[in-house]
Structures are given as structure tokens and as C-alpha cells.
Length: 137
Image (tube, rainbow, N blue to C red):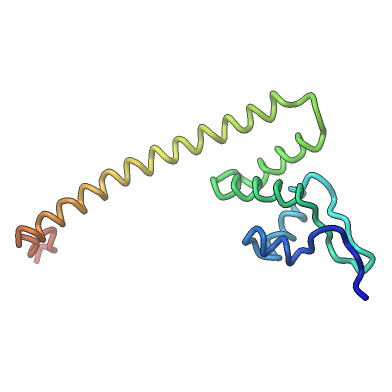
């Protein structure tokens, strides 16, 4: 008979989040969870849905360019409880501004690339594509 865990195994969390088991262990080692993940009598990690929800937020923060040290700081603030909400907000506002700047940079890149796509499409339609930006001998 199997041991009852009343939670999610690391494998189930990996399936639910699309993150590898290695990544989940990394997040735990880096102190990014809001609590110590308990273990079963057999030593297996037992996650709750709140752990998964927090992990998904941390993964989005990381994917959007937030450094691990900043995610760790955010987790520390949340773990320490009420009273530091202005600090959390400041951290999130700074990251939001960073993301907006990256998006603006990418939009500028996209504008240039799209212009080239339009130009090449036009040349192909007109039959004038040969020699467009050809290397000079």
C-alpha cells in the first residue's frame, strides 16, 4: 500500500508547470519558495497548489528577465509577512519598467525587420529581387 501524501509530488509539479525536476530543485536550493517544502516519510517532496502557483509566478518573473537574486529578495519580502508591501511594489514597478523598456527595444527591432520583409516581398512580386543587398565583388 502506498504512502498518503495529500499533496503533489515533484513529478506532478513538473508535469503541471512544464518545468524540469532539476529546475524545481534549483528553485528550492535558491530559496525561492515561500516555505520549506515538506517531505514524506520516504523523503519525497510534497507540494501544495499554493507552492505551484508561487512557482509559476517566479518562473514568469525569471522568464521576463528578473535576476534570481531579485526573485529571492521578493520571496524574502513575501515570506516576512505584512508591512513591507511598499518594498514589494517598488521591486515589481522596477521590473515592470525593465520589461517595458525591453518591449520598446524589441518593437524597434521588429519595425526594422518588418520593413525589410515588406521590401523583399515587394521585390519578389515585382521580379526585382535579384541583386537586392548582394555582396559587392
